[in-house]
Amino acid sequence: MTEGALRRLDDSGVPLLLARLGVGATFLVLGGNKLADPVAFLKALREYDMFPPGAPVLMNVTAAALPFAEVACGALLLAGVAVRGTALFLLGLLAAFSLAIHAHASDLAAAGAQPLCSIVFDCGCGKGLQNACSALAQNAVLLLLCLVALASRSRRWCLRAEWLRRG
Image 1 (cartoon, one colour):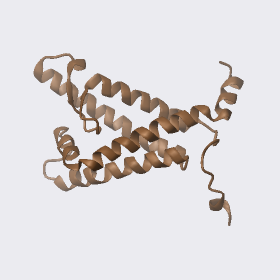
Image 2 (cartoon, rainbow, N blue to C red; image 1 turned 45 degrees about the horizontal axis):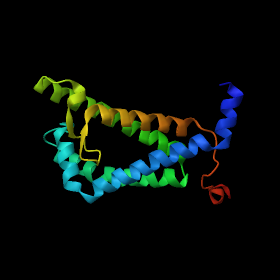
Image 3 (spheres, one colour; image 1 turned 90 degrees about the horizontal axis):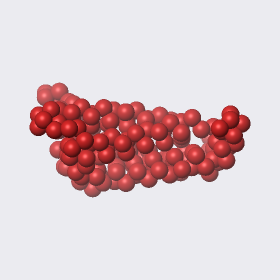
Image 4 (tube, one colour; image 1 turned 90 degrees about the vertical axis):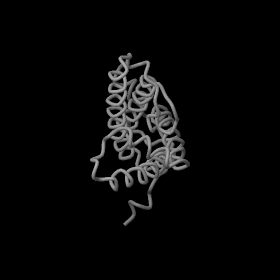
């Protein structure tokens, strides 16, 4: 595809719209699932051993705040507000989630002398038990969609904040 064709495709707003709808709906649903069962999410977070043992407050604050952030980001993307900033924030979250899932699944695989893609566990994503490689593949797709939203210059089908620009 030539540069002109890519620019026309981006100007159409379709890639951005698809990326916004896909990532926004996903985070709205997954954040909502975590809010519906905060204890399960806290237990899943605990399994990752990412927090210092003497800092349960940090883990509790993360477990309480992260679902609200995911729902808010999902809503912002669906509405088309603060698209690039939201996409960048979610890109960082997805990168961290993917690294954590890979590390935890690798530990489980090594402990059980199993291949990585045979590991099934609750990744804390809000979907319950999941295959590790499937979770990583889903995150890769979401990462790619966040990159599309981040790179797009189109604002077609986004809410416009004209009132913010007025003096």
